[in-house]
Length: 115
Image (cartoon, rainbow, N blue to C red; front, side, top):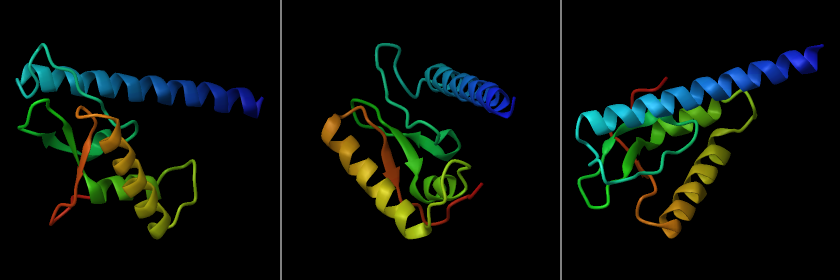
């Protein structure tokens, strides 16, 4: 019964995360941060780290690097230490930069607002 309960809980969490993403995208379009003919790529699980949108074309969603590290460290699904989290996020960022211009950018802010 515990396995089924965890499965349902995971499905609900995935639905909530998708709902937050859709709300974020809607807000970015409503505020004209992104034009109606543009599209952006969001980094899954880092919704609370969004700090804005780049001014370049095409637009890219900007994330607070340190808040992303905090999210990785506090994730229920792993027991990553700080150095591993930094290594993972740096590799993730580098991989995204190679994929294309619409992928997220991670900004090392001077005063992060951690979760």
